[in-house]
Amino acid sequence: MTKKQKKRKEIKRKLLHKYRLVILNESTFEEKISFKLSRLNVFVTGSLLMIVLIGLTILLIAFTALREYIPGYSSTKLKKQATELTYKTDSLVRILRYTNRYLDNIRMVLKGDIENNEVNRDSLFQQFKIDPASIDLTPTRQDSLLRAEVALEDKYNLFERNSDKKSMVLFPPITGSVTMPFNAEEKHYAVDVVAPIDTPVKAAANGTVIFSEWTAETGYVIILEHEGGLLTVYKHNGSLAKSQGAVVQGGEVIASVGNTGELTTGPHLHFELWDNGTPVNPLDFIDFN
Image (cartoon, rainbow, N blue to C red; front, side):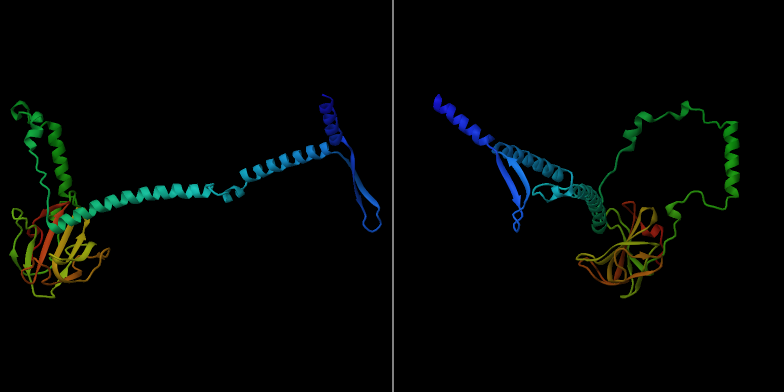
């Protein structure tokens, strides 16, 4: 016990033993500053300084832009950019999906494939049928007055109230003899018009070129999109005068008659007219003679 006590006293003495730190002028040896220190004071002061420095370093890193230089730490700017890129990627995926669907429709027009979506309407509306014998169809006085008023307005109306696509006037792309008419049963959704090679092919109406490329089966093909969901297709051309994205006017030259493609049978124009994805007979709208 005596040795342990002596050892403790010796340690305590060393820790509390006073030392003087003197700063002298090297030339004159004049004493400038002096400090009384002990080992315990030096240890406590150094520990406090280290704690303060560590705290200041943590605050500096946590609340300043220096934290962005720490490996593995993502900055606010990078997070914002990542979020914006995520939104842009989602938008691009949505646009790509719509574009692919649009291209599928164009591909269907090029190949002449149509889905059979015929539905028996009688079976759908059977439950809503009403026996006409059970209804009094005699017009009332108010109904007669209203009909007369509407008829009078239409008589002096200078503007057309209802626009029917059948009344739309289309320019003939070329003039010539129709060698093969429209035949939906044989999947010939077009009319073939014979004309000399290099005869100018004109746009049937104002529109935008949505396809202008070479295909193996039908040669040079150009497709125009018009108002009201109308598409006009021109196949077996000898050359194309317009590229995709071009805006054309009705009657403007867009191609020339040719004899291109594996399915061609001679110099002619294969002309198709589509209404909202459904092929219609061009002869109902255009006179090629």
